[in-house]
Figure (cartoon, rainbow, N blue to C red):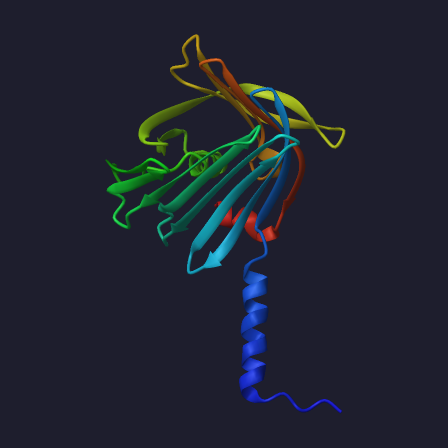
Length: 236
């Protein structure tokens, strides 16, 4: 015979169930990726952490390469995004690199850390990290703000990206033709190009990204998509 559950135990079970439910991803996307000629399988997830905090993760793995990124951030009632912690790690042919960016709560400083030490960078409020600006761009497209300008910290440097909607294009997903918006980064020179495709009919999901810089290339193409009904509300 099982004993009756005490009030304290019942409360513990309910709290644990709530945590499990809260941890369910709002969004999961799977991509085929290429980085410096290596084929990778990429999965991105957006998970709630509670108290208006979230983590956006990107994990790419292949036979001889691995690239992982994560961005922990918060959004307030006015929709302002505040990055907290960005982590990057890479292993290619056994050679590893990793670093992290820690943002202060006021959005005025970020600490860059790698195996060589630390460096503090002065920033202005609204500065994002290399992963988070892509998610913010997705939201701005859904809101049709018309201003697609982002400042973010990349390693120990500040970068400014501004995008233009260059046109419409059809791409394939699960054998179906999908309407997309193609965006081009302003200011590309002969050694650099960044193109992105987003699907308005699928929550403005990133369908494809292609970036080249100084001879290095990185590209991803969407293979599958799972988004909770709450994601569209979250995006707005």
